[in-house]
Image (cartoon, rainbow, N blue to C red):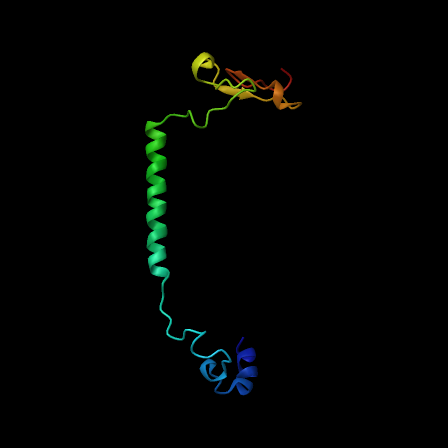
Amino acid sequence: MQQKSDKHKEKLGDFDVRKSSKFGEKVINYDRVATDRGFCYLLCFVVLITVGLAIFGYTQGGNRWVAPYDPTGTMCGHGEAADYPLLYIPQDTWASAVCVTKCPKVGE
């Protein structure tokens, strides 16, 4: 890697962006400051809130939002299908999916 660096050292010489810029001081802000620290704190805050909400939802909310529905709109594991918590979807079509107590094995 040192060879590549030395190769261009002669051509670059004392190259300076400020002197070579065609845009001037109005377009390029040479007095930059790091702004990533604030966004890193914001990201950490959002992640913590998301994890907290996930834990709260898991411990308090149950599974009504992720429960499967059969084609007739019945929520498996709730209401009239409380004894049938799983949704079996045959390979042929979604329209023949049904709530079941246990998934069938191959050949059943």
